[in-house]
Amino acid sequence: MKQLLVPRIGPPEVLRVITAPDPEPRPGEVRIRVHAAGLNFSDLLARQGLYPDAPKPPCVVGYEVAGVIDAVGGGETAFRVGDRVLAMTKFGGQSSAVVVPQALLFPLPDDWSFAEGAAFPVVYLTAYHMLVRVAAAQRGESVVVHAAAGGVGLAVAEMGRVLGLRVIGLASAAKHGVLRDYGVEPIDGRDPQWDRAVRALAPRGVDIVLDASGENLRRGYELLAPVGRLIIYGVSGLSTGTRRNIVRVLWQVLRLPRFGPLSLMNKNLSVAGVNIGHLWHHAELLRPQMETLLVLAAAGKVRPRVDREFAVEDAAAAHHHIHARRNIGKVVLTFA
Image 1: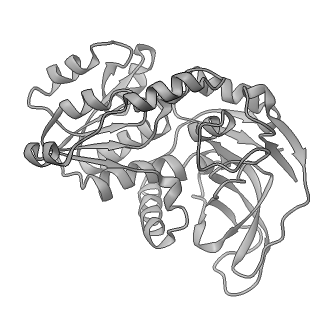
Image 2 (image 1 turned 90 degrees about the vertical axis):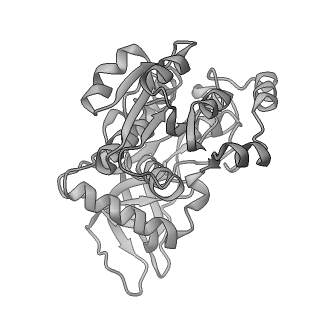
């Protein structure tokens, strides 16, 4: 099988495609011949040595795949060789063959491409979990989402339509047309006074702020209406280029705001954190959410937008594409 290896910490050019023996499934597992694997910002942080969860290099990362089952490890299973599936992986997903437990395996919608399947689990589970489980969003509430034209941002937009939410999205001006097509009210995320623009749209404040940057937490918190919820699901602000800058990382970490319990209580506000990767092995929690999302997919209410497909041999270009914030939707790696 082919694997995308992170041999050491460094820029995208360190990435290497290697060959390795195919893994063998054990009872309760299946092997998938991978056609497409998702690429997430956490994978870029792992390559830069800025993602604590990732295994130490040399390593293979990747949280999600889509492909065809080519071996079953035995035992009772609802899946068979030849089934088109999508699956969640705890690293190792950027490989042409992966073994996964059946609890993390789902049928690929009939009219979806493999690229769409690989673009689905991480961003839609993140959006659903934040809005439904953590924020308990109510119809008519307002949501501000940063990086609104990225994979999670567009998933939030679609879930906003399903849940009846007003979504205000921050993104560069060139991406505003796409956001409007998704029903999002766009604001220029590069405007240093973006929070004033949000306040102009929502004078009483907003109910939910979703922030994956870590750089705007204080201003997001100050935008909250009574009983508002700030949800932090990433710290992409730690990476501002293709190489790690330890001094900047430490400075950014030191600048992160602290939210004291007395202030939260007196203002009736909530601050929560989400790391969907830390829940990957809690199938009892995530599987019902994924099943609900696939019902919505079957009804045509959600569908991932694939920005670009890169052959795994072009993974460095894919990393550069995301570093430059060029993507609208999800970037995936493909295996011939």
